[in-house]
Structure formats: C-alpha cells, structure tokens
Image (cartoon, rainbow, N blue to C red; front, side, top):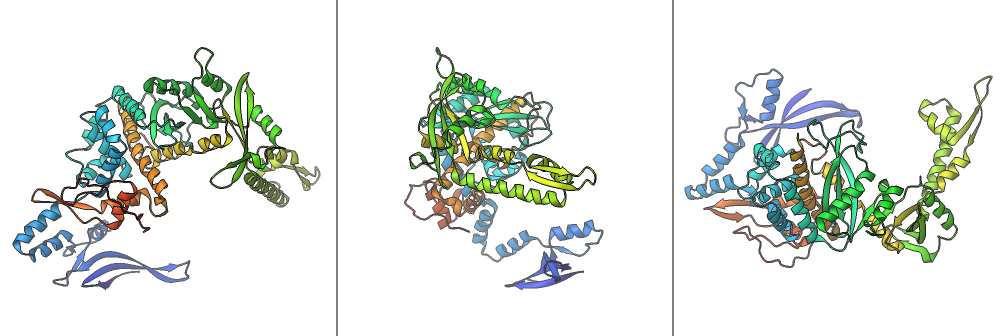
Amino acid sequence: MASITHQRVGKHTYMYLSVSYWNAEKKRPDNRKTRIGKLDIMTGEPLYTQEYLDSLVESGKSIEGMRLWDKSREVKIILDNIPRDETVVAREVLSSTKDFGSTYFLRELANKIGLVDTLKNSLPGIWQEVFWLACFLVCEDKPVMYCDDWVNSHDGVGLVKLGSQRISDLLISFGEVERATFYRAWYKLIREREYIALDITSVSSYSNNIEYCEWGYNRDGEDLPQVNICMLFGEQSRLPVYQTIYSGSLGDVTTLRSTISEFAALTGDRDIMFVMDKGFYSTANVITMLGNEEEGWLCKFLMAVPFSNKPPRLHIAEERENIDTTDNVVFTSNTLIRGVCRTAIWDECELLAHVFFDPVKELSERNELCGYVSSLKKKALDDPHNNKLAAEYRKYLTITMSEETGAVVDISIRNGVIAKKLETVGWFVLLSNHVRDPQTAYDAYRMKDVVEKGFLRYKNSLGLDRLRVHNDDRMQNKVFVAFIALIIASSIYETMSRQGLHNSMTLDRLLLTMDKLKSAQISGKTVLRPITREQSDILAAFSLPLPDSNTGLPTEIKKRGRKPRAG
C-alpha cells in the first residue's frame, strides 16, 4: 500500500511516496521511501518532481492542477532578494560556472609527461581535439556521442567542439603517417633502456565493413568477428609504448615477427627485451627470435614455457632434489621462492632456462587437489551416476559396478593421475637468450602484468568492449585515440600506485574530487573557487602546480606534504 508522507529538514518540508511491504529478511513489515517533491516555502502548496509527474502520466493518472518543482525558479527567488548590482554578478557567476579541476589536472599531467608536445608535433591542427577526446574516454564511461556535453560543461578545454559529426570527421582526418610519427616520437621520449612487455587482446565488432575484422580465437568467448590489437608497454615507466592492429583470424605466434620488425623499423631500435607469456611460445617462434648467424638475434626475449613441452618437465625433474636451498632464494612481493639458471638446448639452440619453485604454492595446491579428490570420492559413493560430475569421476576415480545389480562395488582414487598433475605444481620455467640472473628474470616477468592491466582498462574503462565504427580508417583512429587515453590513465595509475593513493581513492574518485574545483567568468575574467586541501594534496602527489585563482594558469609548485584523505 502506498501513501504520501512529509518530512521537515531545516526550513524545507519534503514529500515522500512510502510503499509498505513485507521484509522477508527482517521478518517484519517495512517500507520504501522515494522523494517526490516538497512544499512551497512561500505558499505551502505541494510541488512535484518531473519524474513523479511522468510516472503518473505513464500509469494513466491525471496531473491536472499539480505544480512542478522548478529548481530554477528557486534560484530566481533568491536572486530577487539580492541588491540589483549584486544580482547581475550573481547571474553571471551562475550561468558561467563550469567544472575546472579535472581538465586542469589532465592537461598539466599530459604536459609533464611530454604527451602534449608529442601530439602537437605529430598531429598539428587537430591535436587538441584528439587530446580532449582521449580525456573524455578517461573521465566518462559513456559513448563518444556524449563528448560535446562533457566539453561544454568543463572549463580549460578552449574552443574545441566535439559533437558527433565533428568526431566522425576527426576519425578520418589523419592516417598512418601521423600515427607512425607519434609512435616514433613517443618511444624516443620515454625510452629508458627498459624491458618491453608484449601482449595481444581482441576487440569484437558487429560491423561487416572493417577489413581487419575476422573470425578467430575470441579471448572473451564471444560469437563475433574481431580485430587483434598488439600492444607494447614499458615495464619501468608503466606507460604504453606502441600498438599495432592485425586481422582477427591471426594467432599470437603469427603476429610476433611482424610486430618486432615493424617496431624496430619505426623506432630504429632493436636493443630491447620482449617479455612474453607462454601463449607466444613455439619452437619456430624461438628460432625466429634467435635469427641467424649473419643478422644475429631478432630481439632479446624472456618467455614463459608451457608444460605441454617436454624440456621444462625435464628441467624440473633434474632440479627437484637440489633447488630448495638458501643459495637459490628469489625474493617476491609475497613470499620467498627458489630459482636457478641453467643452460638449455632447445631444438639445437643454446639458451638460458630459469627454473622456479614456490614451496608455499606447491603445498597449498597439493592440499587443495587432495581435498577435492577426497570429496569427489564421497560424492561418488552417494551418487555414482551424477551426470554433472561424470567427467571428473572418470578423470580422478576408478568406479567398479556390479554387473548383476548395478550397485557400486568399489571406488578407488587414480593416484597415478594425481601424481602426474602434482609434478609441475608450484613450478614454472622462463626461457631467455639474454638474462642470466634468476632474480632479474623473475622481476621482469612479473611486471608483465602492466600489459594485462592495461588491456583490461582498454576494454572496460575506455569503452572499447565494442568497436562502434564501420570502416577501417575510423577503426584505426578510434583505437589510436584510445591509446592516447590509455597513456593518460596509465600515468595516473602509476603515480597513484607509487604514492599509495590507491589506499584512499579510485581514479574515478580522484577525478570527481578535482571536478569539485569550479571556475566562473566575471566581467570576462576567469575566477576559481578556493582550492580544497584534498585537491591541493592530489596535485602535490603528482608534482603538479596549483592553479592561479584569477587566471586558472599554473603557479609555482610548493611543497605540500599530506596525501589525500580517504573518503
């Protein structure tokens, strides 16, 4: 049953629609309240929200004589009580107030890491539109059709216009030459003699007009054609370095040589080491990276090796008895593991195999597997014909049934299967043609998660779970704009992680906090509201200058020691 109730808050009285219901969890009557309006402070008449009036119309009820709660009218009443000269100023402030903090923060951060200058030199004439479109992707989890609303509500963006038609034109206004110029300059700027992590993700599309969009192994399990995006990340800077797009039908192994050669041709640099997951491993791939006697190595590499291959199992068998010693300790963020480096011959190639053993993981997974198989045996005793568990029964158990009665005669555990599975539990092997120290190899490989986290942001945070474009030019450039957005987002995440800000806020909350810093135009001049301590602390954590309250331009950086407080 529904009823309208009133609640007084200060000098205002609000109206709520109260709906009674039985709360099964609390086992007692309860009610849900929704605010539907307020009483006019001058006349006491009820004023209703637009949402409530719309709901009445949809249900077929009349709203004749019901007054709308018009908040803009309240502003007018307030202004009518202000002296005339002050009213003019107040109206000007209210009409020109915009969000300022997030655009200031993003612009100054991009200036600091050199992104703005790189864009200016690579995409003259359109760099501002590309940059602010990328900033929109970082700030909003919405389709780009809403970008112009975001631009219009934020100060500091300049005269940029990003309506749907302008974005459509922008995405075909530059091409491969401009993108290559950017990648070359960007890599030159951030190169740190660092390791480069490489990985591939796929992005699905409904379009039939994208040449690269083909059927292939879909990492998200979707029944859609896709394009493959191969990305390189600097493991020290934690920033995207380069990306390239391949047809969706190509596998990880096929794209490796092309990516390495393309990157080397673009940057003129082969003196880097690629860190790759086991999905890139094959004997042919290893031989490709080793090159030949005349050319030398195609690249330095560090690669995980799957246990489906015989060599890593042999290495584990040879190291099993002697690896667990103090001399072989390798430090990790959570616990101590063991690691050794040994010479390995792989298809007549002499390489370095790093064999690692995690005793804590080995014990944990051993106990987990033994417990699972024991519980599986109990379930088989109770219900040996369970169709859902039939495959697991066959894998781990031997069930003997009576031919006469069909009853269970005996159930035994297949200990040989368990022993085979436990052979590699807690172990992993990395293959390299360059790294000789196990600690260095482990650290480099574990930092590879930078790529994986970057791709996750690519799809989820930057709205690339679907390519909502319909031809190759727009597809290539939309992915490029998203790459710029990923540089910005990765830079923010890296500093937040280094400064410990993840303990008190998310990226979304950081940007929301900065957006509370508003600007207004008074007599043609920009005036900022006072900056809060939390906003000041955020800028300090990123070593960015405070904005001048009268111009919105950066001031000198001052030492401000506190980190943002948790909300």
